[in-house]
Length: 550
Image (cartoon, rainbow, N blue to C red; front, side, top):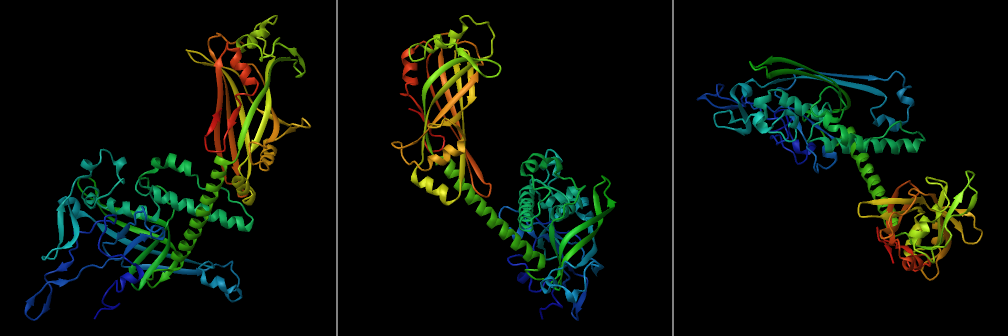
């Protein structure tokens, strides 16, 4: 009669839903020895019969992959070759804790006031696989042995062992011996980073970091560090296969339906005790010491499993909320406003070191001459190489937003600002020369007081059409980078770059960059006059990267 006393994994699917004790591709491979059926045992008066003494070995697996739903995550399991002969369990109360009877009753459901340690030994023997260059499938033959197949050498599958872990096969065990089992063990407990586990580890550590930040935010404390995603991606490959560290991952160990442990492995001790003549380790003894957070009957949701599921679900909700917030600020940044920069005056001035102006170096306004002669006019009577000259361009700034975007910003407490850089370039056949470049500054149209871009952005929200825009002034003043325009047949370009940044109350932000330009031949007075008179303003529409020159 089936039951706990006759079946080591009785009702296995109740605590490992959808699982089976049959090997899966990511588990350590089955064992050729000992064979699962013993044909030399008398169990009937009529003679010898095959007696099923198949080992129902315990196993270890990671908890977090199953919590994450298994999507794109390897759920490795390490099956024991022999169940441990001795298991040590030690539980002690923290001496710093007050009388347990005086504690908050809710704390009694959490294994915090005490410390539970758990240790056991495992033995692995892969002599049969290494000597025979065979590996065992999960199928048992009628002769009472596992079906064996010829193994493909690891050396023929990977050009270098640095590639090992991008995929693993059961027949690797014939080349690696017990190192194939240790590879699975190390990846489960967090003692190694493998190529096929880096995505899972990144998700795990990122979620853990986010959960810690959320907890500390509610308690008024601040974390000393957060998970560095970019640093992880840049350096993770350097640690592939390195087992010289232990960053514990939550694990579950199932000895039987009556005995399950969940917790973190605090220390490992591996003793390699036998080698092949090629010095491949074929036998080892493993000692594991754990900090246990659950010890008891096997069940689907134990303390640690449930805690991780809740933490992961909350982290996913937080991540979803952040993604929605980020989507909102991105949408606002891409559509936030319309801007029209209308040039009205261009001047070449000379300034003293204290920034007081000593006069204009350009005798004629740009309204009546080509920019070639206008730009080079300051050389008359000036010493070569003088860098006190400044180029000035000023104009009118009209801003407005669409009603829907204005309401989105107001309803979601979004703030936005912008920065505009104007560059003057000479475009030649051999390359481009920067003539002048500067970040624009702004003043009000009435008081002529300097104002911030945030103030202009705020004003723009109250204007919803190009027919009734908010009006301010803008100014560019910068020392010349290049003294003269070299050839009047070259083109001169005014190139404007706008960077809009939108931020919400939680600090989520998004930036959109837009560009607009105007160019004409340096000797074309008509084109430059039309530009300065405002017939060719810089116009930025409120759509992503849709800044246009009309």
